[in-house]
Length: 409
Image (tube, rainbow, N blue to C red; front, side):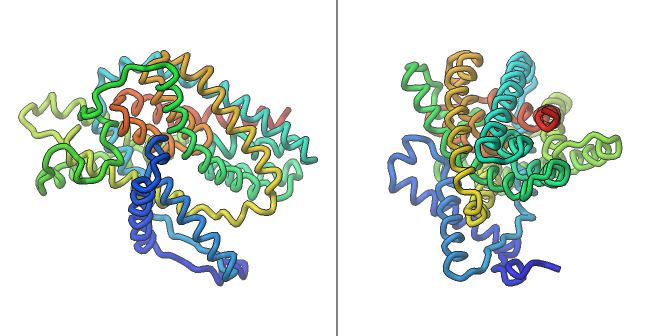
């Protein structure tokens, strides 16, 4: 039996949700065009539009007493589509070059997760909660996101007596998503300005340089054949990726669906052009860039506009203090540690913007931060390979270890 509030909710079906998300994106474009600070600090259009839409939904709840619930089934499909295009645009040479960087990035991430868990535990104690509630105010909800918070919430509540643990985690993840979306661009601008970094050519056609552009700004004409060719190979990679994902599930290896699709895309893009050199391969083409832009823009718009901000009120003081500490700590860690360890250059700047995205929000937020920065300052292709592999492929395993250690503290 559903609660009365949900039975009386304003429900937006999947088709309408996608349509609204497109309108949300265009509202973000208008906001960015009107307010210069959004452009100056590389705030992605879906973020500004999505936050505005979430505030409007909150106002609807406040005035009508009815929740606004979106059917987000199409969102997951768009995420898989986007990361498949990332794989199809990747080069083995970049992956080999990024091996040591990937290992270092993973080490930094695990170190920060420990810091994040510690902050959550201290905040829990200060507000009179069991210390185990701290995992829901830290790495389970921030690095882990809404999915991890929902998964661990019942465990923390039932085992350690933390009432409303899942709700605290979901609220923390929601605030983290907002912080992640708005911190990346300002951090990148600060690092570039402070260190007077040399920037790449902004008009390069390397992956990462043209996301979030308006279609009129895409370099080169996109024909029907080009677009269908890109979609065909994306679908082939997704079909194989789904099969790999099912095989991994049966073997007990749990990974997000987009990870095998990303890896399959990498394999296809670095094998088929060699085997069939006369084939017109779609990687790094305007058509592929258009699909990348569409899938990520609509996905992020849907993620931000569907935030249920009205659920934050119950724990407002706890969440405000904790998130302020988490956001400030993340910014300091990125500037003082991540940027320096990654090489103190433009690549390190883009990685830093992405780190803010997934350390406080989610992998798509990290990609959105990086694409907004590369749109303004120029491409950084390697960053778009290293960060998703760390944030999606390795972090879930490390996060589970950190959470279990924190709960047994």
